[in-house]
Amino acid sequence: MHLNQVIRQLGYSQHEADVYLASLQLGGSTATEIAEKAKLPRTTVTVVIESLHKKGLMNAYLNGRRKVWAAENPERLMIALHEHEAALKLVMPELQSLRHETGVKPSVRTYSGEDEIKQIMGDIIETKHRISAIVNWDEWTDFLGKEWVADFIETRYRHFLQIRLLTPKTERSLALKQRDARELRTTQFLPTDVKIHNSNFIYGNKVAIISLNKKRPVGILVEDADIAHTMETLFASLWRESAGG
Image (cartoon, rainbow, N blue to C red; front, side, top):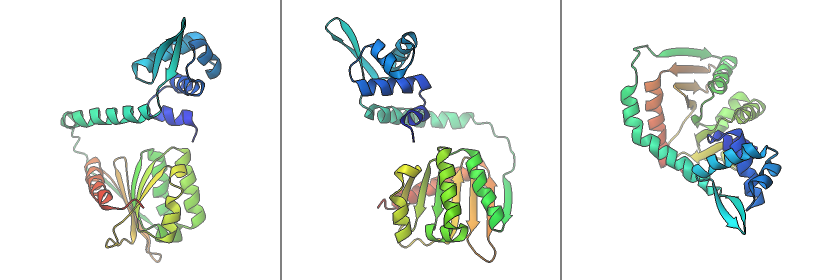
């Protein structure tokens, strides 16, 4: 994944990403030098630098008579992300209290057969939301085929959809974990006493439960925010009990 795209996914603008990366590569530099490196007008870079300075990503110092700007350590991006997360958690109860209850009944759809179940996987891509999954990786790849699963991973990656995966620890799932960083995935292994023979996906306000029975594969897709929230809570509990390696 291109560094610029990752930074923009954190909420920064295209120009902010360009200027920060240029400054990071140059070290201490003037606004003019940063503008040349970023291939942007100096006036634009001056405004962007001030924005990044306010966000704690760039600082200035004097080198003789020159005002020099330097990008902060990239770890500052992670710190800012955690700060935003903490702030959101603080106001979450108040946000939940403002939520408008529509009274709309949950949507439930069923899918039968391998081709229809693949439609659920297509819906995961179209929903464009991070994914939490509990999957028996060996049975899943045997069910849909290695080529199809590899294509799905590539499509998910192109759409920048991150996934947290819980799966039994096997030779194949260990090999999968080795590719986590380049496939936007975090894999953890289920406790040995937890046995699963179906696949469960939580994304957005949807929950998909898919049977891996070869003779009669069936998928159920439930669309309801409260059900998805409950399933995500249960997933988080199981995630804490699972091993990372």
